[in-house]
Image (cartoon, one colour):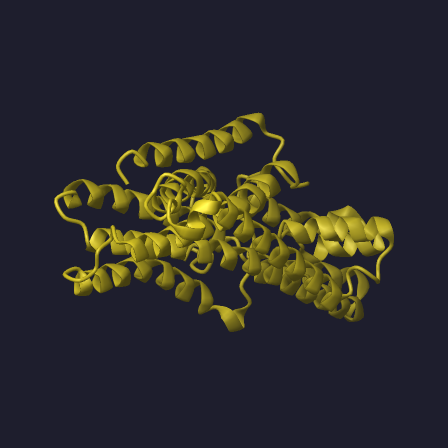
Length: 344
């Protein structure tokens, strides 16, 4: 809502807290809430793990590794597809390609930055949109970021006064292509992340819906668990530059996440008299889903969320105080979720 309603302003540190606390939550979820339960369900020392082909190998890490590699291949294929579709790998020099690829990788493509890498125009033209990216992705600026529409309007006005309407049309075309490229890559990474989280939400709903005496302990823990995960994916979703024709998509993605667990709970309540969470088949299904989700969230958490923000982001803030805050948020999120693993 803050990206669409001008009067709604989220303080910078609140946004950074949600973004990086959520990243820590997602990484801890992969290890503590998914991979560990998978061992308890289909690991070597379980009923499933000591039966038939399940006894021949330690399957939880193998399944997690497989899903991690599949996500890597999907991510790589999506990035190559976008590069080929928009000609970024062929129409630029080696130096310009590297610059453009770096901006694409972090969802940071904007018209001014891409134009500068391609034609080396004066840097003052890139100032406003570049600050917009830093505000969303690295917290470099304290003032509110320009929306894509406002940034495009401001840049067009500057160029109209200096260079005429022909160049404005060219720059607008570049910006449209750049924003589309950024959207394609960011939404692909986000959908993979949400897919892994939704897998886990289904298991949580089934567990809560069939809980017995442990419900009073399980319920508040799962409420916190789902809230923290929602905080993390919501902060990531807010930074994706959705085109106007897809303005409905973020609402739909939020609804899918919010409704998955309640629907799973309703299903579990309907079959609780016949569903046995400790049965052989139930353990196989939940164990495979947990291990698969663990691999997905391990890749997205470590690569898409942490590595790309902290290690490979050329626009990362140089403010040590802000960096310390961001790192502490990651550690706090991971620590709290690891602690919740004691109960659920």
